[in-house]
Length: 212
Image (tube, rainbow, N blue to C red; front, side, top):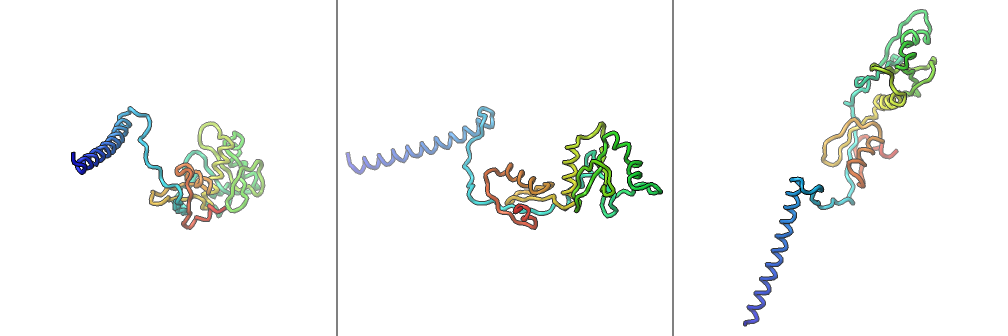
């Protein structure tokens, strides 16, 4: 038999083997996908791992449309500061400040449905254990029963952040904006949950919060 003819046959056999291997690989991938969607497999087909070396660009802006926490839920805040958005003018008259507070909120305070609120400055609110001349306001509960102190403390922390403009919008690469994130802590928690083990590059007017 002619040597050239033998070489041509060997080349064709090798080519056919390669084609069969490639076709088998494609068929195997298609069967895995089909089996997964039919519920035969309890794990999704493997996808190529993304390149985790390049940083993701994250834009951070102030969420100016964030809801006022007093407009949601059953906790409400009334401030004694006339410059504050939640200001309430408690009954005036011959009574002093403390007497007026007790007359207006005494029943709620006695039942544990309200807490006195202090202000460290710049709308940084906290629960105050006793009434003082510097008491900033009262937070009260409109629901049944009485609220847990820890829940009220957490609510005041969020409300303080809202007052201070520390509610943020985040956009990662070309994805949609995510809003209503309170403080740098929630921004970090969101990014670490949605994009684990990634490196970030921060941009936007509020990018500096990630440097603190």
